[in-house]
Image 1: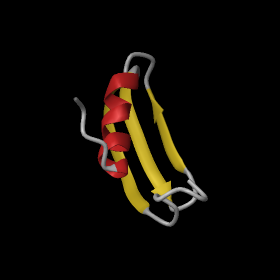
Image 2 (image 1 turned 60 degrees about the vertical axis):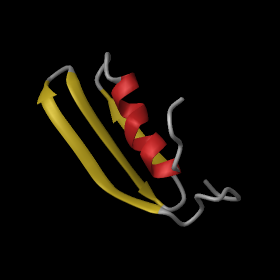
Image 3 (image 1 turned 30 degrees about the horizontal axis):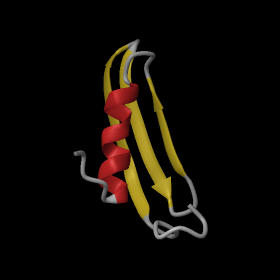
Image 4 (image 1 turned 120 degrees about the vertical axis):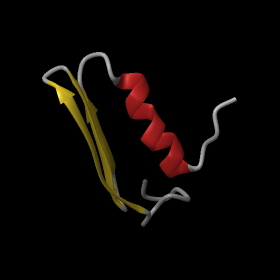
Length: 58
């Protein structure tokens, strides 16, 4: 996020753990946004990033 409007913005760790294959973790330390998820949760992982970045879906 260096050299972007999000540089320095942090996000406390967000964790959703439902099953071994159904989970999402997201956080930002102000330099990197980190998001990891289960094999079918990519769409769900994009939600905290959109919220963090202030992007509203069309």
